[in-house]
Image 1 (cartoon, rainbow, N blue to C red):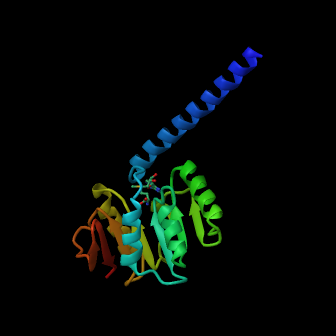
Image 2: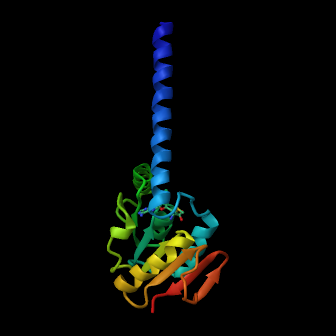
Image 3: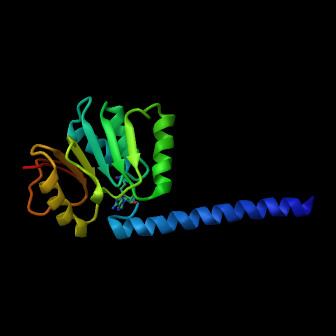
Length: 176
Ligand SMILES: C[S@@+](CC[C@H](N)C(=O)[O-])C[C@H]1O[C@@H](n2cnc3c(N)ncnc32)[C@H](O)[C@@H]1O
């Protein structure tokens, strides 16, 4: 009886330890491919949604969608919210949250790098990247997206562009 209990406890710890290890390895991979997983606060998410003036039916993309909080907020505003996230556990967590919130039909997240995704249909792009990636981000924007696409960037500036509006640490840019 005691041996069985010890086996069950050991197994639970093993599963938790392996889960934590996978989580941190994926996080390091995310850091290497773009930016580490640091979620935007709910206040920042609200500022991003408000600043981008999301309209019902628009295509809103979150590059590196983390735990899906921006996608869910955009879907609540009536948008089709699409994200790419390199961390598989966060992808599944987002899907679970979207389903739980009844927004599964409006939220779509893929386990894939946003660098290899197609951004051309976006009406709004949300980003929380890192300074060293902003030039590369700008070049892909210029190559792919339509002029007039709104870009809400948390914290980091797009080099050489002036924001058209700002709320706290969120800047809104309009692609020229
Ligand atoms: C700073 S967090 C932002 C999360 C979310 N957008 C938010 O604001 O709450 C950056 C996210 O991008 C993911 N990431 C990093 N590089 C990526 C890449 N090349 N493709 C897809 N996701 C990536 C990380 O795993 C992390 O979850």
